[in-house]
Image 1 (cartoon, rainbow, N blue to C red):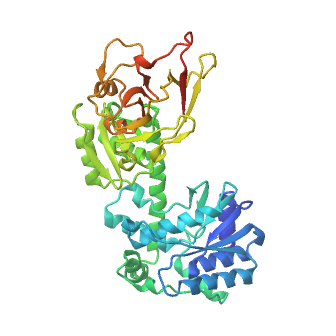
Image 2: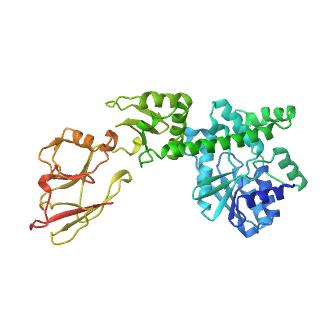
Length: 446
């Protein structure tokens, strides 16, 4: 079976022949071959677009961009280019470039399209060997899947079962031209070291090595699917909040299922998976934590924290420092850190307001209305329908609000006096009934 037929069969198998096909075109031999295959296939040209991402990492980057433009013009295939700036350098150059590349490519896909990239069988072998080097589990050994969700679309790799040799032979048979990235020869990068110094030797010694490695990855993908199905069953007994995992649920499971469920939970929330050592630390410090302790485990920029017999995923960057914001009650107020919007409106009791509104006595004209964040836990409050005042700290414990979320709660104050914890309660002294003649202030919290 020739490569054109194999790729067409791949697209038929995954029901992609009617979709717009967005090819990530680097200009290297692999993506050039895939472009040529699509060009020679039964897929209409107007159904194919090519996108080149210029990372600006080489003094030849602009030349590669121009090469891709001319190649697509020759094939009469729509072409777009994106120039990106690498920002996530904590991922390393390769990781930052990959993140920027896929972010750029995501602009061109929707639910009616599919992103195609040209990773092949030897790339899968590299991925498998890198996973072995890191001591990865089944998820790492599963390597790259042939099809995966991407943005609001699908990402497919039609050449994943095709060897580098077959790709090279195809390119030579059609006298194709492509660009060579000088950095591909730099064996300081792990993938280049494997590609240039290791995998060729392995395939020379054992000609079926890459094919067998790809089969191993496929078998691990099947095991990963089975593990996910078990995790879904276990997760059904959790609460309804995806970012919270019940410790009571975990202690009922075997150690293997605990590990599996935690990894599934983290992937569900798009959190970088922990190493084996860090996973053990999560279990030791968080699952076994005393109820009065709140240990913190760092996972990249996020945290795993324990509170009220639950594990929480916390983003510390959205925790607001104590702040006082003066309000104009005649205009909407956008809260910081994406916490929402407050819409104020002074009304009379004769106006019907929704039950979701905060309804309090209107401030005097001379009073300053503020939204406060980070009030001290020692401040006393008396929510409506209560007889006694209690410290905010005690009230938030009653409401089961974790400490790190309390600083993000907006408090309404008049001249510095607490009027309402918006979204939770109204202070007794400021509560109103609709049978009096006091002016009221309604607040919609969106």
